[in-house]
Length: 70
Image 1 (tube, one colour):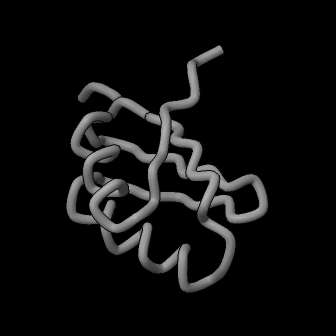
Image 2 (image 1 turned 135 degrees about the vertical axis):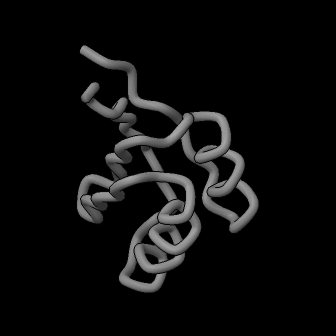
Image 3 (image 1 turned 90 degrees about the horizontal axis):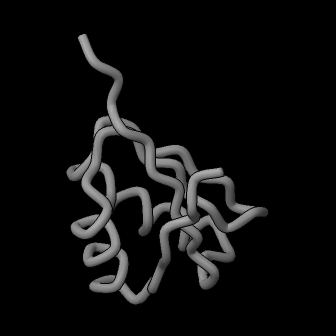
């Protein structure tokens, strides 16, 4: 079994629990796992393709960008 790709997204406008819930609801159908770090305004997504994730967030008013891998 191969490991699922992990993507980290920066979501600068995500600032509260409601924002967190909206982001999670938008991304959950597109990925195997979604982990949100609200204070850092970052989302770690396992198993999703980056472009659809970014489009889903844009559609709900949370423009995001991919954090480059180190």
